[in-house]
Image 1 (cartoon, rainbow, N blue to C red):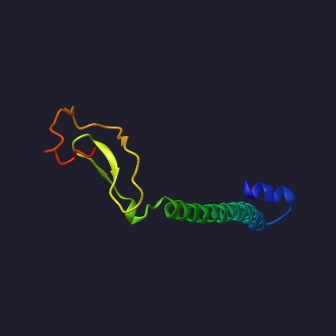
Image 2: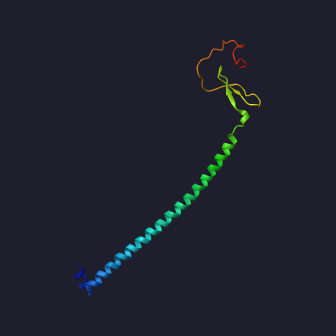
Image 3: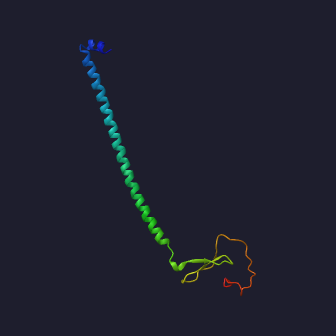
Length: 123
């Protein structure tokens, strides 16, 4: 095929061979340039995405610190549970907490215990 084409074009076979080698090299170079541009765009997109996610992460960390600071109870506001009636009472120095039922129970308790001998008679 190379010799037939060379005869048809009035060229030497080596010239035809070099022409096709050059053509393959140019095609490969153009494809490499296209791939490079695609990778550049992809890299730019990923860089922007990374910046956005870093900013979002910083905002979430800031929000978490603020939320944890606001949710901390002072040491004087500790709560204790009355073992006889399973109610929560304030154990600190602050004002007494309202006695509220907790959302779970350990088991049924009888409140017919002598209030003078029972340690949690104040409940």
